[in-house]
Length: 366
Image (cartoon, rainbow, N blue to C red; front, side, top):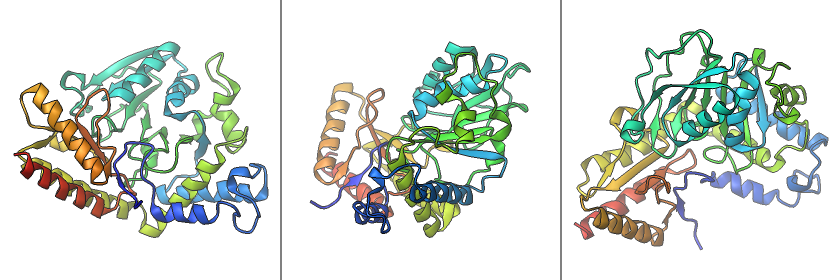
């Protein structure tokens, strides 16, 4: 069977070149006579893999020396708790609620202290980014938290919030490495890798060094203290070795592709093809206000007023698209409709062919 065009939100499409390379090395990694899957994380061979991965990521993102890069387990959901555990010195923080994952992080923070909702776009089903130029931030807040790209709702912060001097923590899971970022604007920038960087099983956290201390909330497990992980170069316990190895290959692929400036250019081109079509379609429409649209996740619905007919048409579209080799286009269970996730590894022809298919479907179902 030939490969499909995979529009999954995560675990998601990976560069074919990376998969082929990993397949070639599956039984024997660079003459070691073993697979990376069965290699000791304390070995010299693996030590080089993880160190190279970190260096390539530092190069790609221009990460300053006073930031630590940690490869962690537990997914972004676990990191929702790690943030307050490691940062809530005054037991108070501000959260901007722009979707499901910000909501979950907010609920988690409430377990550890006072989490304050600074702004929200819940009133319009998270279809926009609220104005964050003058938030009700108080002096006793430890940090301000955002989810920068909202995988489910397809919105993206184009301008970072004015945190009034407070540390900014950002979950970038679904826009990680899709464009250049200024790391110095963040105290913590982190993401689960399974959307735009690698296979599931790892969170990469980039943390300013002054935040890595022994001064955590009482009861913080040893494993979840950033200092434990930083002091041991992410090797305190067995890390997600194979996931990190694949991420390292993706970093090399990104460098080869021309780095993050080039990726942004390609991602803008891909997104424009899909959004331009949605803006003039008589059957389909995007769900996000234009100025806040994500380059990575594009949710859309059928323009049909009758709820039952709308659901029928959307189910028909998803079924026929899947049969035509465009898979995982169903929207998140909490919002329905459709969603195309067009991460770095989605080739431009994948988006072009999807639009071609959508035009044909529209014609046949006018």
